[in-house]
Amino acid sequence: MSGESAGDEESAPGEVSNRTATVRTTHADAPLVAAALAPDETDSMTTRVDGDAIECVVERPTTGGLQSTVDDHVVNLRVADRLVERASEHLAADDGGRRSDTNGDTTNT
Image (cartoon, rainbow, N blue to C red; front, side, top):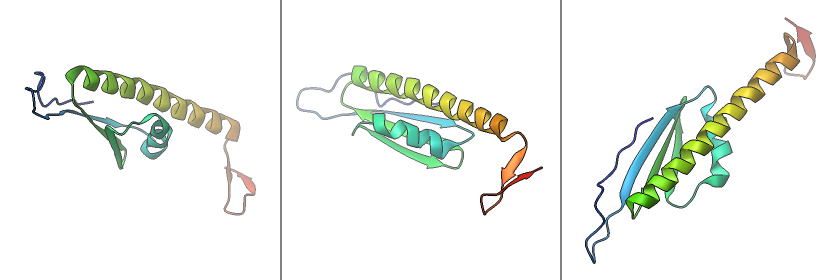
């Protein structure tokens, strides 16, 4: 993960200056993890998938708000990643070495 902040000072009166952080993580199934995160995203977040990576840019007007949003995103990210990983493990165990062909028929491998 990486994070960048545009500055820690609050804006001077009349100035509009947002703080920005970028969180980039890699996953075995990045599109599925990103899809699991989508319902919890806010308007201050922009997320994109690039291969096995998820990149989320957070922009907030205050440093405290930025920290809270990034903290929430990281917690949600860890939960989503664990769920996808566990689901994959269970599917592999339930498969028992069998695969479905394109017609949905099961064959032993």
